[in-house]
Image (cartoon, rainbow over all chains, first blue to last red; front, top):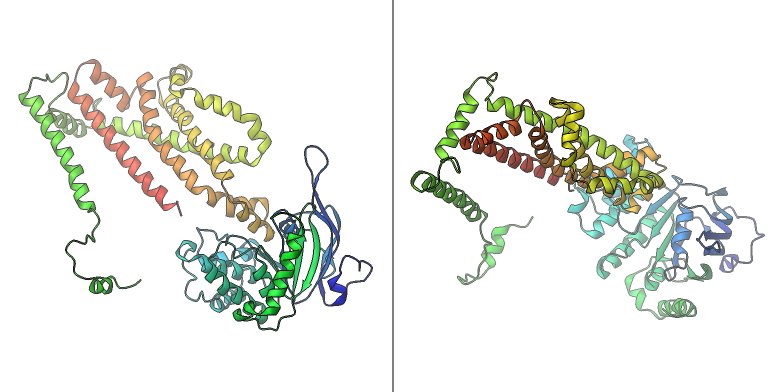
Length: 272
Length: 273
């Protein structure tokens, strides 16, 4: 735990057995016309242990989306190393499930077909997979909605289907890119509880990108605070709140001091 | 669904409160009323007014032309079945070929941005050209038969599909493509499962346009030079001042256009997700 809080210096430490993701000096430079390039990620190092819930907060342009794209295998990095279970991430991997900003359900497919879409692409729809999809839909309260089309569902229900789609492959790691940004505050709170329940039942590792400081403290074991220009991992904040988390914890003093500290870290980097 | 009658029961009875929207049935009745008044005025002016039959023929003469035209055997030079069939066949063939080429080329251009940037100026230039203007040229090249007319339809239906499939391809949400990519989808799978279905609303909007244009293009082609078809018949009747025949052909074209438009509208709505 102590090694994790200051990951920028422990580059020589070999990955311990329970480390799922390891990033060392990860750097991404986007080419530009003037040839100088834009540093979207600058020397980012961290470890994520198996079963952890990590949130990444930061302003637009801090590189959190870039980091998520590299983790999901959609984007190459320029320098450094990033590994999942010791293997370098060099492309999309069935062990990594992705939940997008918008639900991204395909409107011409039913909810069941949408949820099975990754398996259809990978040509591995089996009766066991179907069964798993059905039971996952049931656990998020979408029982009986399998034959409906996305537009017949509310925004929250659509995003739940999006989460189920990411879980059907039974990945080790779930990447969530501001998944509840478009939802109203009440639904958002419900979805946060839902995600925690899924996380506690499935023991997946989750990396959750958000704009909301409250959301990041409420959900996470650790919060990665990123700052822009260039995109850096400024601080890793351990959230020592008891589990399971409840909504009334948001009003506690400890919660307030965590969110205050994170806000200060983000503000230190200039104007909002 | 909640029970609507439950809502009604809980509503206070207030005669001032309007709960119904203007009825669709009344609007339909009004549309039909307009048609009926036009027919009445037409009948009145042509039978009892001073308008001569070589300017506007009376309705009964137009219907007589229609009945006659559809009753004579198919081999007769004035058979409306035959000429309607020829025109529709030209329009249909041209529509199928032109649309297919437009969709194929549109997706190809959109997929290879370099090709799109290099070729698009020509596409724009050619699209700006009034394509009916090349109809006489095509008749010189391909003669008075079917080929020239089909080609005119091909040229005119090609562009709506080209432009719409390029637009459809570019309108695909980036996240949908990312979704396919994180599932290790191949380029072909991305096209088949994401791009093609995502652009369907654009394709069908283009097909709708092209279907209506195809009829127009076939008629224009027949005006320029033809051995058969409603366009040729129209010209012949017009030249011999047989206004009953002219109106009969126009009526057929109107009904065909209306039906085509209606069918494509239904098809388009089906694919609008």
